[in-house]
Amino acid sequence: MRIKTQKNPHDTLQEELQKERAAVLGRAGELLAAAIAKLQTAEADINKRLCRIDDLMAKSAEMPADRTLIRQRQRDILEINGEIDRYNLLREHAKLRYYYLIVTREAMGLRKHDRVREIYGIPDRKGHLRADCG
Image (tube, rainbow, N blue to C red; front, side, top):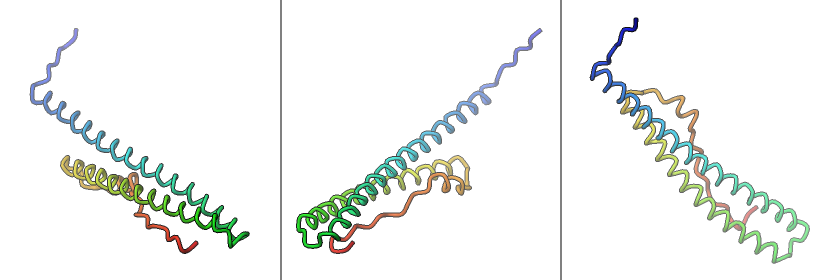
């Protein structure tokens, strides 16, 4: 014989609220993770371009008077600085998403964020390269 237990409306409402809170928190974490992934992709692009500059530096050491290599290096540095600007904008977006996640957690009564900081650490800002130095 089965006993039918019926949830009272209050318990049902509380359960629905908990599910919605979990969904909101999950979405905030997913948006932050996506922002950090874009940031990491931008950083990888910058690193690839930096390798190209290293190659140009090695070539220009062999041929120091080659104006073509010098101009190419300067163009590459300008492009990298544009990528650095893009990276820094993506970083600001990731910081905003991090803030939203923390605010969401606080609104839900979660006060300790050390683990969140470990998982979703936002890297430092990048500075521009100077065209007149190596």
